[in-house]
Amino acid sequence: MSRLRLRRIFWRGAATILVVAALVALGAVVKGNFSDTDGRILGTLAVLLYTGGALLAGLALVERGRARWLGSALVAASPVALALMLLWVWSWVDEDGDEHHWRLAWSSMLVLLAGLLAVTALLLARQRTLERLAYAASGLGALAVTLSVVAIWQHDPGTSLAKALAASWILAVLAWSLVPVLRRWSSVDEQDRAERVLATLDDVELVASRGAVDGVTVEGRPAPGERLVLRKRS
Image (cartoon, rainbow, N blue to C red):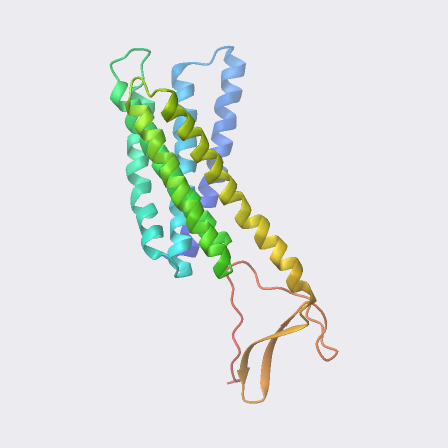
């Protein structure tokens, strides 16, 4: 199955999940009460969206050809996290008997979040300097998630761990947020560049430009995921 077909299936499934979630919520409103089963169904739908989005992000990074090991790790971790979170959603009771279930579920959710932060930062970074910042955000995110998992499995984390946890999350979110901001800033500086030659074939050039080139104006733009190819007419 191609990645394009997989993405289409995911987005169709995401639309279906949102519709089903709305119907479950409306059913709860009409019934006048929100049962445990309704909550479990909504939790299942949310988990499917979360892990499915992480899976697609990992596949996108693998397809990009950069840090494939990270994308592959996120792809492999997504179904494991899905299983652990679903186990907690459907075995949850208002007692202490499922203590390890919720710890495993939240730990897997946070590990997946660390992967998402790293993968999305690398996908957003287009320049080498921004890639370094993306890797820094990945490291800070991994540190924040590690401290969070330690806090989850400790009954009394303590003040020092709580402060380190808060500081690491603040720095991780800051580094991640700077990647798209600096990318947009650098693109503003590049707007003054008139032309950029992408490829040549004999005496023909494929030129990227924000305006008309030699009187020729191109109206259409490549769709997301498409690439321009210059070839001889057969």
